[in-house]
Amino acid sequence: MKLKNIFQILEKEYPLAISIEFANQLGIHDNSGMLINFDDEIKQILFALDLTDAVVENAIKNNINCIITHHPVIFKPIKSLSAIGENSTLLKAIVNRINIISMHLNADAAPKGIDYYLANALGLKKLKTVQHTILDRCQYGHIFEISKKNLDCILKECILEFKTEKIWLFGDKNKEITTVASFCGAGIDQSAIQLIRENNVELVVSSDIKHNFLVDLVGRNIAVLQMTHYANENYGFYKIYEDIMKKLACTCHYFLEKNLL
Image (cartoon, rainbow, N blue to C red; front, side, top):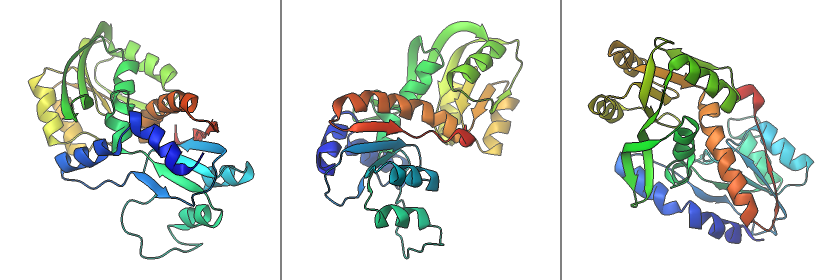
């Protein structure tokens, strides 16, 4: 398969239009899409949340000439490339003719995207509302009801489901809750805080939460479950990999950065 053919398959489930519209709504920048394209025949694909040196080395070792990442490998304009600079990993990928597609905000907010899978892993029973609706069916920032359970039970379930011990729970472990909000990645902002208050959310699950937002939530007796950015988003991106690999006429692999879980 050519890279453009792979991209066309991705477009059906995770269209680039989601990233463009989502970025416009938030007033931010994104750079998803075919970011490195040698127009080679692709026989093997490596999925990874980030383009790290370990990911590129794995691709080189196994003769994989296509990587699909969640976080964009080129985000802001690049002024220089150096084998010893901050863009050395990207340069290594280019030198070894590795094609790269990045699926960022489009993977976050797709109907079956990363935030959707995060909410489902937490036990989504009934959806109450969302922070952002993009292109009708695409959503980010889910607020939903779950079966009543205490926070200690939720914490233990998350440790098993997300395969990580690095989860910080702020709140009374014995408190029983039914209303949860999920914001994959670093999605908590002031508008999210307002939405959380308005919907009487009892538990917020996210990562990279700014200190002032954390203080605000805890001060209002709203529990917070914060995990690493990697663990928070790797879960959903792996689900995307499991779905997409069935539709690609290539051998697909997934690279797990265990040290980031």
